Image (tube, rainbow, N blue to C red; front, side, top):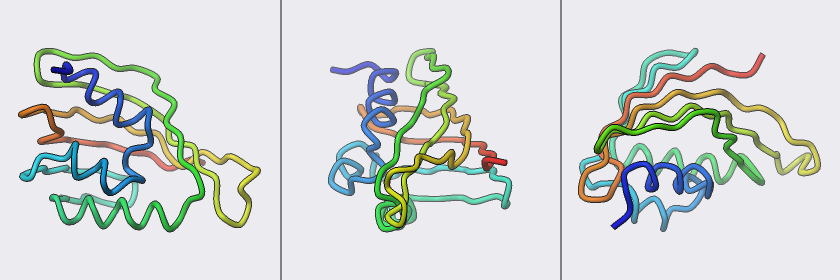
Length: 122
């Protein structure tokens, strides 16, 4: 069985958020994400995260995470990363979307509870 760190790393390195089938595999049925963003505070559950996945897939041609830091303590994983995107209108240019800091709790080999902070690109 994969470690919590491996599960989280794989999700971000694979741009898993763009793949609904993969999200269904890696999201715990009771997943919760508390998100503090530059635009406000969100509380997302399973259906919300699947809707976010769909929105991102329709908005971006490609998405890539550059992981800056990742560490774990048992079933908790902290990851700091930047998302880079390519739009359908301009697939040749990669843009910084935002930088994120997330602490995930992994349960039953799946993403279970997360607390995330993000800052949009300047």
